[in-house]
Amino acid sequence: MERLPKVAIPAIIAAIVLIIILAKSAVTVESGQAGVLYKTFGGGVVTDEPALGEGFHLIAPWNRVFIYEVRQQEILDKMSVLSSNGLDIKLEASVWFQPAYENLGKLHQEKGEQYKERILLPAIRSAARSVVGRYTPEQLYSSKRDAIQQEIFEETQKFVKDQYIQLNEVLVRDVTLPATIKDAIERKLRQEQESLEYEFRLVTASKEAEKVIIEAQGKADANRILSASLTDKILQDKGIEATVKLSESSNSKVIVIGSGDSGLPIILGNQ
Image (cartoon, rainbow, N blue to C red; front, side):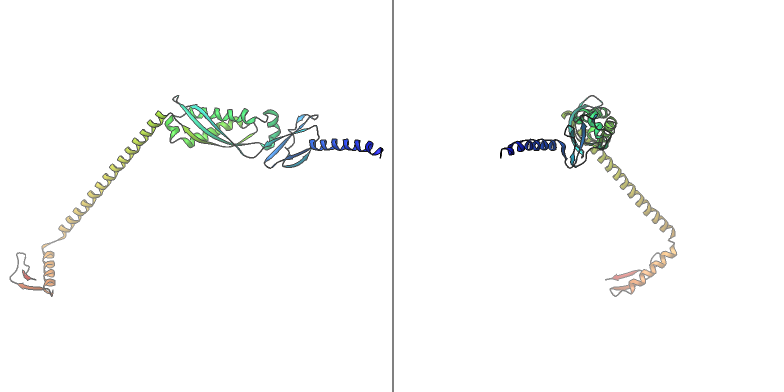
């Protein structure tokens, strides 16, 4: 009984030390994450090996693991930029990105865990100022939104392509102009729309007039051709045919007396 405490105390101490070592050695990487291994006595950040993937890992207790989100992420940034004529424009842009998985160790070593604030945000702001400065407020407000978005993406890509960041998309969510400029642009757009509608009505009326003229010309040509083809003999024959048909009608009472100036019978007494 006297020897039991002497044996138990070292065992308890050993168990505690073992638990501490295991706690320091066990690393769990969650879904959508990756770990960068830092070897305290082995050269620091490991850059020549793949990052630690999802799941449970055992490391030396004196080493550390830095966890990074490797799924696509989003940064929403609001900034003030100048148009080509020096007007202050409020721009709201959303950036979709993720760290380059195969270079996660280099990203941690060279840029650190604050790489979004150190690299990505300054890049998107610089690109937005450069691109917006090429356009007028009217272009920003109306027709050039898609082009501006694509150009900002391309400019940002130039900044981050060697920074171990994968840029997926840049979306321009909102462009806010000074109220007076916005009102002036909207008035101009309304006037242009009204002008286009008026021009359309003029073109439509002109085409309708041309259609009427063409139809009238066709009728005149048809009448002229018909008149040229009608001889006295043909007219007389047609008159006789019509007279015969009238005389055969049960609803008519025909009296023929003499003949008309053209040699046709005169029909009287139709009822």
